[in-house]
Length: 313
Image 1 (cartoon, one colour):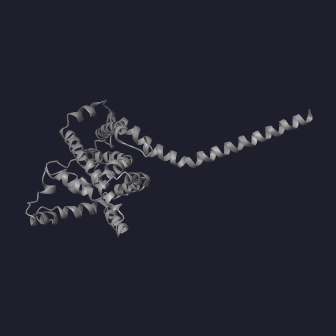
Image 2: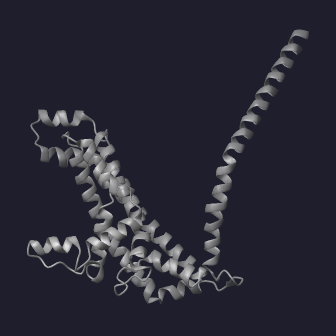
């Protein structure tokens, strides 16, 4: 009986020790995670719910906010500049995202070829993405200058009259797209990683079957690269719909010529920090959030039909 009591006491002590250790580990875990939790609440959760509230108020930072319900949203739907900014942004995204994918994949495939100076060439194509946006803006303003720019000078030599580029309403958005294609280094790097992840077994099997380069590209490389293309597409769409720095630096926030470069984020910024209409800008931010979410959900739903993973049947 005495032995049984001793065993029970030892087990109870061991259980207490385990519980104490688990509690200490749990506390240590919470303490280590606390900075991240505080950062999340202060810099993400609070601004998120604040903007939701302010979108339903008339708020200009200086005066207390006044509850006006959905008036900001109703006013936005009757605002011509809101529609112009949204239209410009969607048109830019429709041009930029597909072209960025095509150029990125093509360049990555070329840079993946085992040629002399491969490392040097990869560095050359990556370097532009390290440049500050303002430096890129100044460089391309000079290159696309209708009178003295190198691009129009080259076109003139081959008998083509160059357009007005950034000063022409028709060519202003394509000019912006050209600038963004020049800084595709990060996307190319991700495509290169995706290409090198494709198993050599597929190509060896294709060689045995007598497949040529074109067949291997369209039946092995591109299908097995679709997960990476899908990732870059989602990120590209989100980035394109939030495009701000480049057009803002190019036009000093005006969106000229004829507001053809007035992007949604620029109009949102102007309302928030130029006109101090924080409530109005918050409503714009939530509409942009809904648009981005809708497009992302559509892309996610469609991915089951065109994204293939290695090992899939």
